[in-house]
Amino acid sequence: MSKPTDLVQGTLDMLILKVIALEPMHGWAIAQRIRQMSGEVLQVGQGALYPALHKLEQSAWITSEWAISDNGRRAKYYTLTDAGRQVLAHETAQWERLAAAISLIVRTA
Image: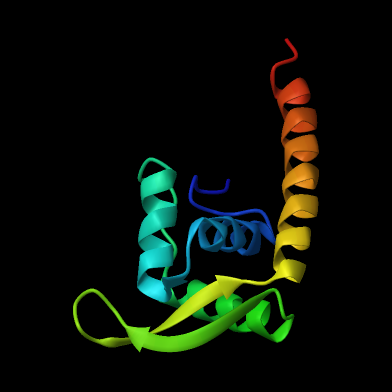
């Protein structure tokens, strides 16, 4: 059986895009925001986060630039591109459709 923190394939990408859509962030802040927004349920480790960020950047859905973080350290900040916004809108609609279909099945007596 899967653990509650296991994500459907591709879901992490959508979550990252959603969080970055709110404001540009560095990797650690992205992981923390996902954890906070999920009510402490989803915890994204570095081993999953940074490869996903790299893939999203290679796909031109996000861009990055180095800047100084709140604690005075250099950090790579990620920003959503226009293409990323389109992908996020499409993936969000797909996710909502899938979640509704699964709910119909799970709630059937």
